[in-house]
Image 1 (cartoon, protein in one colour):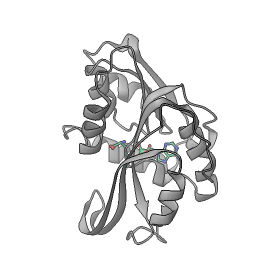
Image 2 (cartoon, rainbow, N blue to C red):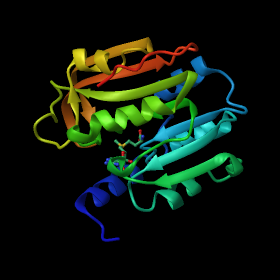
Image 3 (cartoon, rainbow, N blue to C red):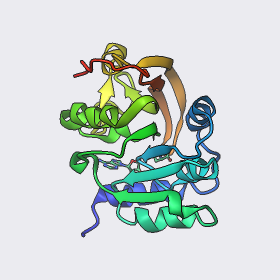
Length: 209
Ligand SMILES: C[S@@+](CC[C@H](N)C(=O)[O-])C[C@H]1O[C@@H](n2cnc3c(N)ncnc32)[C@H](O)[C@@H]1O
């Protein structure tokens, strides 16, 4: 498959992630969710696979998904020494993602904002549809005042839209970041929502858009 500028961009990004700590949101949801043994997690937009590795080490079965070519080899390298009988890797663009395995935890670290806005609702429904009763969901979403809104193709949400998308889930944490910070592209104004939510144990009616 020919490499696109996006592929090159993400290859550079993921190479620069070597050696960083597990992201705080992932650590937090893992603590809340409890022991992983016998349970299924999804790392959606897994990149280098650092959070995939943390989940494997905590005993989870992990399905790691990312659209970037080479993800399989990259995640296998990152997870060397882990029990990879509990690991599956899927190289797939969000636009082509029709389903995910039934999951007790879906973690999407800074990945969903790169979905096409016209496809975001469908992708969100795929994620929600994969959550088992009691299943945990954690994601970093971009807000509509983010510096990249308007300059980068992606999905930027207002707080009201985030709340709408979470309707029917128990919101455990919804932290809005709105201020200057740094990114792999240099300093920027961050407007982001850091979300942890949970599907109730009892059935809910899914009315999200
Ligand atoms: C900002 S990185 C985050 C990676 C990792 N979760 C982390 O926290 O380092 C976004 C990831 O989403 C993937 N990605 C971006 N757009 C995508 C798309 N349309 N379909 C599938 N994966 C995509 C990229 O390949 C990249 O690995």
